[in-house]
Length: 289
Image 1 (cartoon, rainbow, N blue to C red):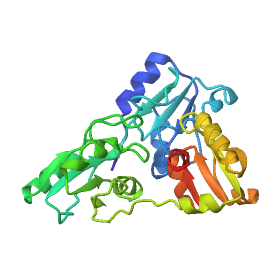
Image 2: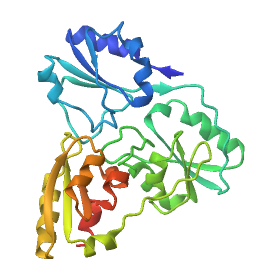
Image 3: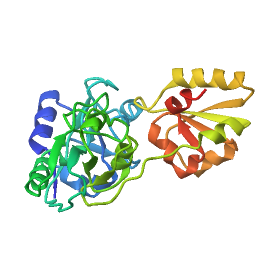
Image 4: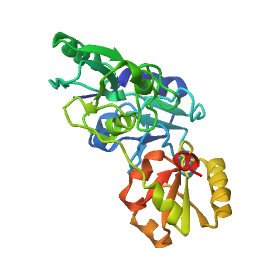
């Protein structure tokens, strides 16, 4: 069951007296858009996928004469990015999960994704009742908000306890977030028992590549132009031909640029996208050149 914070939504609308609101919903929440029509004046729902708190299309405010953007299903980042007063975040909680997965290792590092913030402690108690020592995650670094919470790019809550545990369980249904935790070098699973695998980037291909594309994100929280310019200059000194591409939504059309390797100066998880293979995040590349 998906639980919207209806009272919080009503309070913001009443206080700010909004008339038109851009509404961002994760793909799994889009079917519930009708539930929001009763509490949001003139809601305009965005069909493009909303991947996180970094994914806020500010340009739509002026285009549709809207006063605010409501981002549902994500928490407000503690550091970056910072938006204006018209951008509001409403966390959504998923109820009814009762996972029974018990990992084989003894010391379990436990972190969660935002929709299970109010239920992950029940899973902690379940693990402890089955003889496991549970170590809760620490504070996030920049994109997450709460103690023990992770996002696809911010796994500091897990990293801060990596030396104290034998492995991790991520309170999530999929493997997207758990895969990021697996990159810390310890076994990692979601709470359904699916094993995560750390992403691997083919750095050797970069050094044999002749034509390199540097992709800069167009979204406010997914744009790293300074890092892009730095890596471009370094690669040109190595004799590479480098092109800079600005993009928002990535599709198969990206292959028309016909580059040998993509460097992602945008969301680092885009480097795992099949359209951008072979590729690597810009910060990863800067470690090697």
